[in-house]
Amino acid sequence: MLTWPSGDDAHPAEMKNITRQKNRIEAFAIMTLNIV
Image (cartoon, rainbow, N blue to C red; front, top):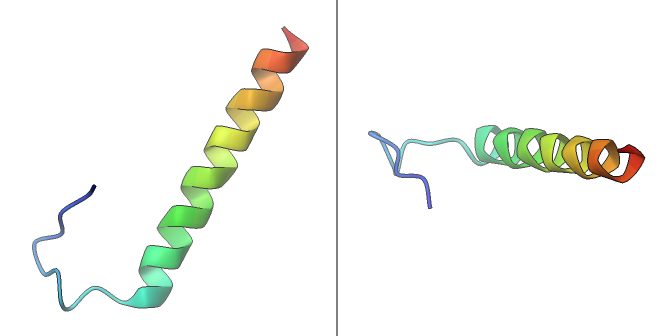
Protein backbone atom coordinates (compact mmCIF):
# COMPACT_ATOMS: atom_id res chain seq x y z
CA MET A 1 0.00 0.00 0.00
CA LEU A 2 1.38 3.38 -0.98
CA THR A 3 1.32 6.19 1.58
CA TRP A 4 1.04 9.75 0.29
CA PRO A 5 2.43 12.78 2.18
CA SER A 6 -0.93 14.53 1.72
CA GLY A 7 -3.19 11.49 2.02
CA ASP A 8 -6.54 13.26 2.29
CA ASP A 9 -5.56 15.79 -0.38
CA ALA A 10 -4.89 13.10 -3.00
CA HIS A 11 -7.28 13.40 -5.94
CA PRO A 12 -9.30 10.25 -6.80
CA ALA A 13 -8.59 10.84 -10.50
CA GLU A 14 -4.87 10.89 -9.79
CA MET A 15 -5.12 7.64 -7.85
CA LYS A 16 -7.11 6.11 -10.72
CA ASN A 17 -4.47 7.17 -13.25
CA ILE A 18 -1.71 5.62 -11.13
CA THR A 19 -3.66 2.37 -10.81
CA ARG A 20 -4.35 2.29 -14.55
CA GLN A 21 -0.68 2.90 -15.35
CA LYS A 22 0.36 0.15 -12.92
CA ASN A 23 -2.12 -2.28 -14.49
CA ARG A 24 -0.81 -1.39 -17.96
CA ILE A 25 2.78 -2.08 -16.87
CA GLU A 26 1.75 -5.42 -15.34
CA ALA A 27 -0.18 -6.40 -18.49
CA PHE A 28 2.83 -5.48 -20.64
CA ALA A 29 5.10 -7.57 -18.42
CA ILE A 30 2.74 -10.56 -18.67
CA MET A 31 2.59 -10.26 -22.47
CA THR A 32 6.38 -10.04 -22.67
CA LEU A 33 6.77 -13.11 -20.45
CA ASN A 34 4.25 -15.01 -22.58
CA ILE A 35 6.15 -14.17 -25.76
CA VAL A 36 9.42 -15.36 -24.20
